Image 1 (cartoon, rainbow, N blue to C red):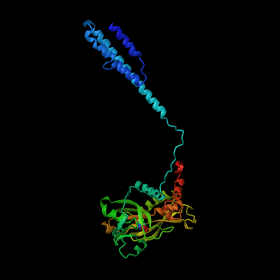
Image 2 (cartoon, rainbow, N blue to C red):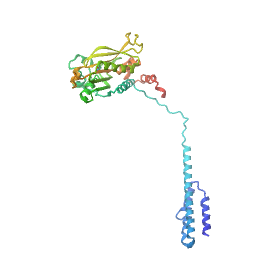
Image 3 (cartoon, protein in one colour):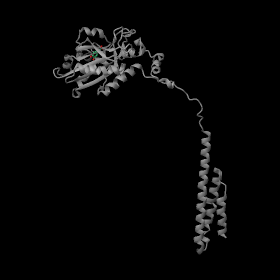
Image 4 (cartoon, rainbow, N blue to C red):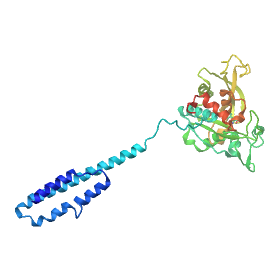
Length: 351
Ligand code: DAH
């Protein structure tokens, strides 16, 4: 009797509809709840004769497992349905045009500085920094420019504190700083790019703030030959493989001999044109062999150690390379000017 009822119940469990959360809840209550049909059958166990208890128990288990299985698969089905509905609602229309945004470009001076840095790093140089608010001691004294030296006249500065602290007029003080503190690193090979300041009236070729890249090598047996080889590399990198350089004697207080470096004109190839004013060469940087007074002042024995130094003006390089006629363009941040660069470099595809 009970057996037939249980078989009927099993069929009922297998056949009942369960496609919504409500139906699932009803199923749970009807069959699996504390007062559900399965529990009810379980409560009959005590009245079942001993020899039938085993079969009865087995059937009861079967009923419970079947009910749980059905419940589980119905729950999965409903969850899956919900997910599909959600996904269908959330489809993104990728055919809509995207929101375009303006892409920035590297400032021409940063570009020149990075090119120079890369080259020198590849030759084993360190890229170092120095303070823009500098001591007179490093900006002038240690560079063989004592107080009253006439060469100071061309580098008037903005003074911060009496005559002792000023905005550096050149990156050369970093030479003295490196030599002072890094003797254990000798041979020193460093470049220092950075901002510099002079009390100049701004015009097409002067800016009270500009940039420089300083270079210094100090070691044993360093000669003009090393300087020439190094500068030739940098010139080829900046202006093209076919470029050559020439030295002209010059004067800087911290080098002896001092050498002005010209590059063969990249417009006419040396034949003579308006850019090189018919000379075939363009002046690009100052350099020389480190003055013994500078070495001595920074604790090096000039009998044992020698060195070379150079100073590059990124503004001048960029003006020559890109045909810019007014230095103020670098500092006024006019996008019409800056945009020319990524156009020239083919970087504006994303615009
Ligand atoms: N500091 C120099 C200037 O501002 C540039 C310069 C020339 C730096 C020769 C050097 C050098 O290191 O050797 O005009």
